Image (tube, rainbow, N blue to C red):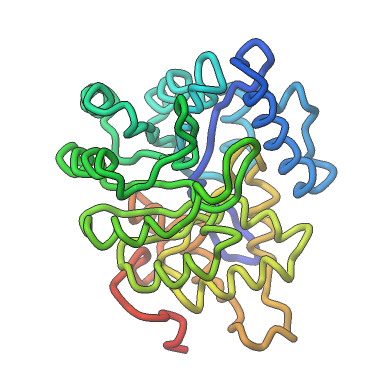
Length: 343
């Protein structure tokens, strides 16, 4: 919980990781390229005083995560988003068992979302069924640009991908988080295109599609899709750190999101350990649209409360203390064209 000027904010960090990018886990040069690109994002978009050294960044473990999120970062609940990258790392990039173990140990603080790759076909489906049963999954995180053998990505509407989405429905896995937008070396930018979200969101209305990174740099494409599809949401990971280095760019991003998709469909996320949540929460609560950007309405305190945690809490059925709730419902994502046009 974060409190400032008498206002209390329930904080859900909807996108965190435990990863291992150490040399001992690299399978090839692409693993090195990936963690180095991650570190460049961290180093270039963070305030200088919170930049980590490279060795700490490649692996930090669960104890450091608990400290940065819950002791110092104001986070009430965090959601792991798994990252496989099995072609680049010996034990995968995201540390599945360590993250799942930590979530099992702290169910009041952590939710574990798993991952799958539809290119594994029937064998992968069987594995997903076993994982869903063991991990009691509510969500998954997908990387459509992930390499697998000769393939450098897949679309959500590919035949096998549809089979997996249908299996998610059967298994009660309703929250489908998808990395869409910023490329990471050596992955291909166009394999993160948002267009396939439009197709599957229309076809699978009982699934929630959370577009991580709000499709950047394809923000306009994302807004048009998420406006028309009631089950498409936006995660602010990678977008919100621009609040420090490019505040007017961030004002444009959040202004467009609030106008098009509205205050109930936007989730705060640090993408930890790309960034630590403490400074992001503090800067977002202090943030306001610059007065000369008159095309956007000022952001209200209630909107910030929804974005920082109440929307994700509604999607994941988290028990928000009574004094941190709003009189109105958060996470109300009914179909509406250009939600911001109401004002």
